[in-house]
Image (cartoon, rainbow, N blue to C red):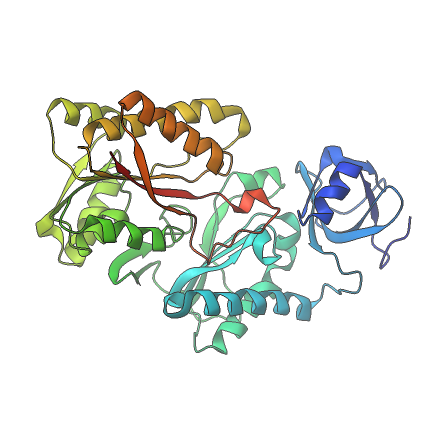
Length: 408
């Protein structure tokens, strides 16, 4: 077997070879046919086929089932500062192109889809919120952070702070510790306040990059919220699983007659109410702290009148083993919503788990419609916003499903 640049060489199975050639950057531990006895965790290694053909170079992660994350299939690449700078430049140039005026608040790096597996970077104005989920990237993160600051400066953005949101359990599978806090380096100023304000779709939100969910805010539904807002005009809207109130606020801003925002978390409800007040929309909204699964049948018993229901639940499944249970959960809330809506009413329904693929999710929604005795007219099928690009051949990057229906 021939290494490209004196890196340790890992021979992989034919199954893995096919995946890599199709564009998938992961090599699982059970796909490795042979490897050196000792390699440093997080080091660069070459991946070859059973016949010794070079397939790519990536980071080794000795404690993870994803044993190698391939960075490049170019045997001439050198993984130095210019390499990381190019990757960051490509990612930022892409967002400048596809997001246009929405560049101020967007995802700058989406892991594998940007050739930076294990890295997430969200931009909230001049603050970056970052997650590093790969042992190899952890070792070169300062170079990457510096590249982010330098490249953004070329576009008039002077980064005030980089918040590390490495408080996720998946890091432990990599042999990394969990923590969160401001990253401090000589190329950054003194850390700012961890609460900042963003404007998305003309709506103002307070974002807590230290204690907010994920990296502080869910950016992936940006344009789906606008699609829902167009439907909401003049209607009575029920927004379930409202979180910070983003769908509800877009509906209200879009001209809804009235919007009820529901979440099981009192903190989420209070946050949504504060965001409504921040935007002067509280007069056409009310807020309910309740379990959506329990609330929907109660509203049906009360013959509550809504013209448009939005279902944006958290991921009901994060593994293949729980897909069936997740399907039952998705079916129940969609069935309850369809029973509550009048004929001619509208439904927006979502799933944010890549394990619940579009075909399976649509099947679940169709089953709910059959049990409700209604027919669905599809208005629109959407996915995550383009700052969260889908890498064809890497199903994990295609996770968000959003459908708009009329119930007839």
